[in-house]
Every structure is written in structure tokens, then in C-alpha cells.
Image 1 (cartoon, rainbow, N blue to C red):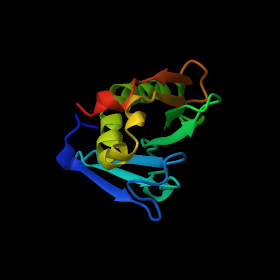
Image 2 (image 1 turned 60 degrees about the vertical axis):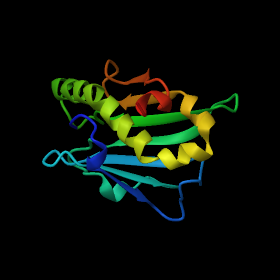
Image 3 (image 1 turned 60 degrees about the horizontal axis):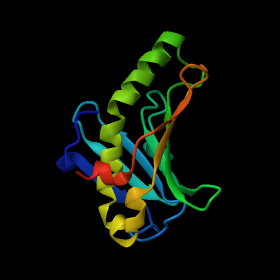
Length: 152
């Protein structure tokens, strides 16, 4: 993914989702085109798995969830591997995901700006990304700040 360019972001609300509903369980599917640099963000009650390239698996999925204390968190995931890639290939994929995650999160947050007008407290909610891998050294959950920092 290239650096974030708002003009290259396409946002699709999947009905019955709107810019106000749902809050909890709101799901984001972010995909991109390597050729054009275009980002595609789908927002809905479910992930848009039809947008996911099953060979590349370079999407970022995220969802608003409440933790055990009732606080909202934006929980995301990136598919590093499920055993289909070698250890070295999985390592390369992890490094690419980590390098590009800021751009992906900017796309997700920027694309849903009207939502934050209705839920401004979520601008300060924590973001966690789970890098999913069958290799223990690559499977990790990292903190990525809050949505507020991705709007500037």
C-alpha cells in the first residue's frame, strides 16, 4: 500500500449499515490495488469476504468490540500465514504488513469520519492489530494508538 491519499480511498457502506449504525460490531474490510494504489474500504455488519483475494490475503479486517470492562476497542487482524507460506515468506509478509499498517488504519479511520461525529468518544479508543500466523514468532498483537492520531 502506498502512503495514504484520501483521493484514492473508495468507501462502501454495506446495507443495512449506515454512518451511525452499528457501533458495537461494526466491521471494516480494507483491501487495495497494488497497480493503482487505490484503497477499498467496506463498512458493515459483516466483513466483505468477497473483496478478499484468497491467494494474496493482504486485507486488513477490523471490528469495534467491547472488552471485559465494557470499553470499546478497535480490534483488527492481518493474515500473515496459516501454514501456506514458508517461514521466510511469512517473515516478509509480516514486515510488509507492519510497514503498511499505518496507511491501512488511516484509510479505515478516515473513511468512517462521519461515524466519529456520532461517537466522538471512540476517537480515543485503543486500536489493537493481531498479526495471525502459524509461526509463533510472527503471531502477535500490537497496540496502534487511537483513531484520533490517524485523522491528522
